[in-house]
Image (cartoon, rainbow, N blue to C red; front, side, top):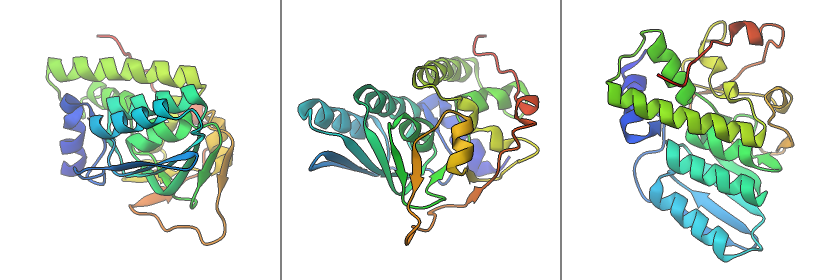
Length: 232
C-alpha cells in the first residue's frame, strides 16, 4: 500500500474515499444549463447541496453533465440517490473518478462517456473494510464504525439501483491488482448491472489520471469475491 492510499483511506474518519488522485479541495461549479445540471469539481457537502437545490427547483432537468475526480462518500451518495430518484441521464465530461464513479455514474438512467477511460474506480467502503479485515490497514474503533455505517448505506444504494458494488474494487485484488484506477468496457460494466452506457468514439478525451482498462474474467469473478461483513 502506498502512503497516498493510506492517507486517503484513513480519511474514512472524514467520510472520504479515494487516493492521492482524488479531487483537491476547492469550490465546485454547479450550474443549470438548459435541461441539464453541469457539475464541475469536487463532490462535498456544499456542491451536493447545490446540485440537489437546482434539481428540486426545476422539474425540467433531465441530465447531469459531470466532471469530477472524486470527493466525499456521503455527499456523493446523496447525489447518486438524487440522480436515481429523478431518473437522470449522466454524461461524463472528461473524467468521473473515485466517489463519482462509485455512486454518481452508475445511478444514471442512460450514461454517456467522453472517452473509454473517462470513468475510473479504485475502491469503495466495502474495500476499506476488506483491507481492515485482512490486517492491511489498522483503524480505530470509531473509524471502523463509521466505515461500516457508510458501507451499509453504500450496499443499500447499490441494491436499489440494481448494481453489484464489487465493480468498484474487484480490480484492486488479484489477479487484477491494479495500482491506481481501472475502467471497464460497457460490456463488462453490464456484468455488474451498469447498463445503457455509450462511449464517444470520435475525438475521445484523454484520461486525467492513471486509468487502465481491464477485462473481466467472468468465469472466475465469483471465486475471487471475498466475504466482507458489514456489521461488527
